[in-house]
Length: 167
Image (cartoon, rainbow, N blue to C red; front, side, top):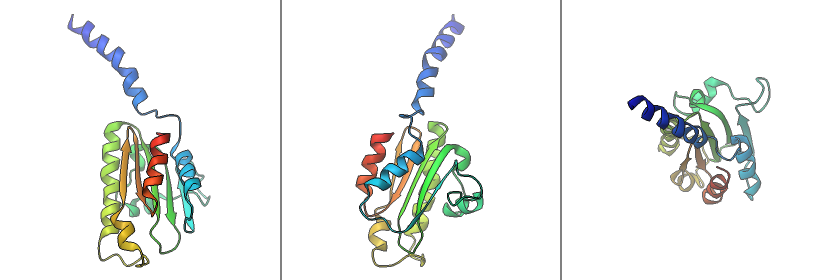
């Protein structure tokens, strides 16, 4: 009797667990490009994504990715990702990861928090100081299902709405 109940629960819950991380079929790259299209003014930026070929401009090496998050990389926890990083000294970043499961999404969130902590340290001298404190203080991590995003821009609310709509 116990086996039948366990089997029934597994059969009935498994599809819900699998669908929970499927989202609406949008990849992080789709979401990022939609976010960028909603932004009125974006500084000169580089876009990186997990599906990029190794020698392309959109490819980011594992070592560089790890540096962004103070020595840890969420790449192994995710099925895909897309990043927008400003090329100059203005602080402007959008990170979108699709974790392989909700448990891994929690781990990705902790790694993204490392990025926020790095940026908000007072001893970071690599950014333009004009609007640094306002933008770095407004850094947002948004998690929904298996999607985890870090938004550090002057348009966080608009970008978050777009991400919510697509996840």
